[in-house]
Length: 152
Image (tube, rainbow, N blue to C red):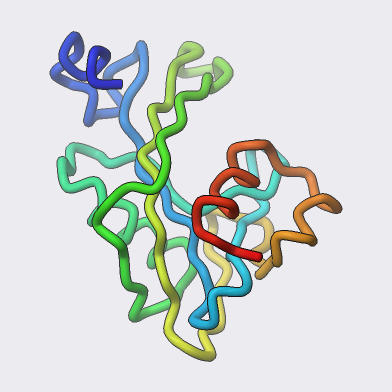
């Protein structure tokens, strides 16, 4: 990722067509038992919340902003140290070529008794325990996030 960013000074912007930085966060409940995932509209899989940083070099702040926007949960706290890095390809669409998302991932903690509010980004939002991940369409990077977050 560092080499990519050194070679692409515009990596903070989605206009960098080869790829760009994204920021996401696994939102965990206050008890540390569940993570909040969204059923992604375009990919049809359960994923952590996040998105494009749109020029924001403060990636923790970008992950927090995306988490609040996509979950509707006010009062989220972000750990400023990333817990994971993930590079994955995004398929070509009508108006953009296939490209890399270089995702910097953070841990976000929800206040007690938080109730998520569905946004236009997702088909559904739901709290999942680590054990429940085996019964839903997701990917290994989400399972890895649960491990790194210490969810049982």
